[in-house]
Length: 172
Image (cartoon, rainbow, N blue to C red; front, side):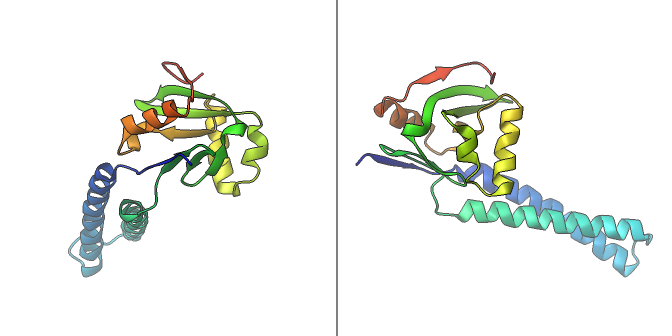
């Protein structure tokens, strides 16, 4: 059985997590300053800093969890392509693959024979997110090449399985 595993590049996730934690620290210092009376107290400021602190903390934890995860982002096999968060997409359901770029990100979009049937099996939040890609004229299911650690190896794995990539400069 042919199978190649590809992981997400962790460098960008870690740098962005550090940035969010730095901003989180600023919000925490401002919040402590408000509570200790070092700054002019206003309930609006208190709630704004508290909300910022909570939101940044949650995003930091989510990114940190992704950064330390040992789970592969994509698995290419002779059965199909397994995408983290989406699951296995069998090659029998794939009509074609489209290589394109959107906002500076290189992507491989999977064009499925019956996209709606496949999307119906996903949880509502994930399904809505993927359907938003369709509304922009892009394939619903896609793999961001730039976020993979081994970009070249991923494209070579697709080539070894004779997966033809239709190349376009941007999504249709």
